[in-house]
Structure formats: structure tokens, C-alpha cells
Image 1 (cartoon, rainbow, N blue to C red):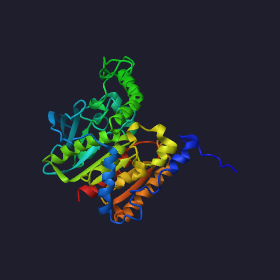
Image 2 (image 1 turned 120 degrees about the vertical axis):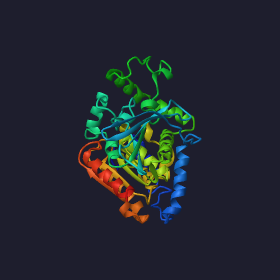
Image 3 (image 1 turned 90 degrees about the vertical axis):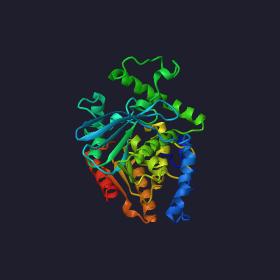
Image 4 (image 1 turned 30 degrees about the vertical axis):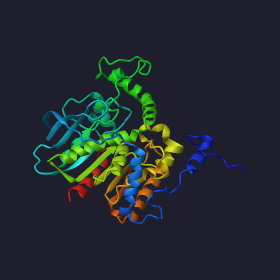
Length: 383
């Protein structure tokens, strides 16, 4: 009797493709051959870097301070730096206005949200009149607050930067052929109408970005990890930051970046991934259509499952915040990802340094979730 096929993104080919990925994967710490997390991690992390094929060389940025200001109890620096590729990166640094001495540092990673026109502004606020679209964005995803500001206020130096294809680093209409941009031109870039048109175009342009990067022997995650590591370089170099107490956090696309940055860079001592935890199997069979091309690292799933990238941080503490009704993932695979990470941390002898919470509701990083995330950072970076 022929068994009914489960519906999936590849149809009759789905189960075959899923079966081609070993469970556990070849370099999973869950494999019996690996017993010492400190011996396992360098080899597994080296494989991650090999798969990412990030741009080279990793030159530390030389930021220029555009201006300084105080707003709502925070000292704020607006920075700009030039990487070896693309337009200059704009960034903000936030810290308590009266802070003295060295503080722990956090790389605040902005989300994707189908909105590439904005980057830094999604999770910050530096004036009483932010762009109306950013007010609505923060109300929808962040409980109406700029979470990077809220975290800085608790006694952290927080750096937030535009990453590849977002905000100041976005692909400009004027830089691509007319037939690719549908002959659109910038005329009033801050208008809601033009921003909406840009974001619609940028969403449809993602597959061209990914294919072009593949043709250069690069990957999209490799580029944004390189961008994010350069921001981490800068944060670690600041005289007001304790470079032994560094963390990162983000929602959605920022959660993806958290997974990759914490997995790739040993300087991250504490991480919080919000709204971006599942398995490669979930992407493969169920949910690739809900996700950006930013997610995918060819070849890596045979060596590490998606949650195991974050598991490369072990035994450093990581917190995963899930929404039970998040349409980007299936609940069973979010729960399986939790079990995978819990197993990695138990085997590493660091069960107390991994925690996953499930909250009711859709895709978000709301006030309750922020409260738990900030307490996690206070526990591990302020002690």
C-alpha cells in the first residue's frame, strides 16, 4: 500500500531531500565521537567559516563620529565607517548619559521585516519625532519601544549598525540597470510611498542578490557576518567597553544574525536570539517561502543543523525566545530545535547556560520578552 505523501515545498522530492541530511549531522556535538566541547568547537567553527566564505580581508573599521547628542537619558554617537565594499555604514552607539568606567557591550542587530529601506532606525530612537513608519514598526514588533535604547539605559554600551542591503547599506536604484529596477528613480526617499515601493522592489530583488553572490563564491550570511564582526571589532575597541563582556541580540533577521555571529565569533560571551529558531528541516519542508534568502549557507546542513550554529557558542550562555504562534516556523520544529540545543548544552556540562522560552502570540520581541532578555544579559554580563 502506497503511503500518502506529506505536503512540502519540494513535493514528491521533499522526503528524499530531507533524508539526505544526516541526523545528527556530521559535525554535530551530539555525535558520540565528540565528547569535549572545547576540542569540538574549533573544528566545527572552522567548518562554519569555510561554508560562509566571508569577504576578505577582515579589516577593522575606522569610524568617523558624525555628531554626538543626548536624548532621553542616553549619550548617543552617530558614526559612519567604510568597509572595503559597498556604501559607508551608518551606526549608532548608545549608553547611559552619566556612565563612567568600562561597561559591558552589546551588538544590537536590527531585523529584516520586509523593510530594507531602514536598518538602525528599526530598534533605536534618537529624537521625539522618528519616521512614522518606524513608530508603527516598533509598535508592531517591539511593544512600542526602541529596545536598543531600553537595553542601553540599563548600563550597556550598545552599537547598532546598518548591515548589508539595509538602510545606508541598501542597494540603490541608481546603481542597478533600468530593466532590473523597473526604471524607478529616487525622488523623495523619505516619503512613505517611495519607501513602500523600494521595499517591494528590494524583496523581489533578493534572489538576484543571492545568485550574484553565489557566482562570486560568496554567501549572503557570509557577507552580513563580516559586516557584523566589524561592528563587534569596533565595540570591543572602545575604551568605555569591557571587551571580556560582549553580547549580541536581535529579532527575526536580527535573530538570524545573532545565531550566525554567536556561532562564528568567540568574543560573543552571551547571546539572545528572538523569533528565529527552528531546524533546517523546517526550512526545507515547510517554511522556506516565509524566509529571506539571507538564511541559507549551501552545504552546511550536512555538518550542522541550524540550532547547532548557535550551539557553537557553548558553554557561553544563550537564550532563545520563541513565539508559539509564529507563522514563520512550525511549532514542532521550534520545539525540536530547543531539544537539540538543550542536548548540546547538557553534553557540554553547561545546562544552566541555555534557556528557551515560548510565548503566546505571533512574530515579535515584545516587552515581556525584552524583560527576560535584559535579565539574561544582566545575569551573565554584569556579574
